[in-house]
Length: 327
Image 1 (cartoon, one colour):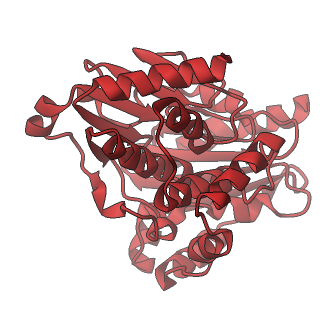
Image 2 (spheres, rainbow, N blue to C red):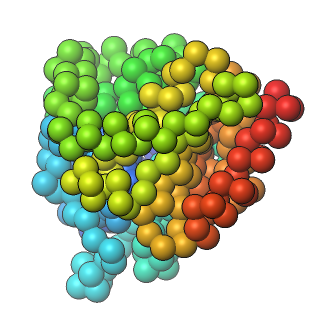
C-alpha cells in the first residue's frame, strides 16, 4: 500500500468511526476549500454519517453554482449546541490549525487533509501531500479507501477544486496526476464546459465596479517586476461589494508582462491588513508569508498583518524586493 493510500485509509476509518463530522477550511474559502468541503459532506452522508460544513467567511460569488452549497454555514463561532454533537472535525487545506478561525474546535479529534509543504501535522490524523495538485484530488483517494463511488455532484465539486487550484491547469501543479484526476472526475459526471462557464461568465456587476477601483491603485515597482494593488473598506462600500469579491483580482496584475511578484493589500478592518502574494517561476513567496505568520505555496501565499496599511506596506514590500534580488 502506498503512503497516499495508507493515509487516505486512516482518514476513511476516522470518518467511518464518527457519528457527527464537522468540516471546515481556511478563511476566505476558495474553490479547492469549498469544493472539497461539499464533496466530503456528501461522502459522509453516503457513509451514513451526519456532517455539517462550517466556514468563518462567505464564499466568492463565482462558486455560487456548487451543488449542496446551502449545506455550508457561515458563522463567527461554532454554536455550542452544534459543538456538543460533533465528535470529529476535518480541516481541509489548512496549513495551520488557526486557519479556519475556530479555536473552539481544536480540543476535538481532528483530521488534517492538506497539500501545503509547511503543514506541521497538527491533527489526530494527518493526510498531508505537498505533491497533490489540490486537496480535492486527495479526496479521491479518501473516497476509494472508504468504498464510496463518485456521484456527479461530488465530481462537480472536486473538479472545481482541481481546476481552481491549478489555475485552469496553467500553474506548475498541473501535473500528470492532476490530469488523471480530471479525467476520472469527468468520467464520473463533471462537465468542464459548464463548470468553466459558471466560474467565469456570471460575474456580478459589483465585482466589476470593485475591480475598476482596485486596478486604479496599481503600482509597478522594481522596473515593472512588482505589481501592487490595494483594496480598502471605502472601496467596498463605493462598489457595494464584499471582501470575498476580491478573490482572483491579484491574478489580473500577476499576468502583466514583466511582473514577477504581485502583492494585494486588503485593509477592511482597523489595524488588520490581509496580504495576498503571487509569483512566477522560482520566486518563493511562501517564505515571506511565513516570516509574518502566514503561509501557502511557493507561488501563492498569504498573511494577516496586524497594523495599518502604511505599516503593512513598509514591512512587506522590502521583503518582496529581497526575494527578487535572490531569484
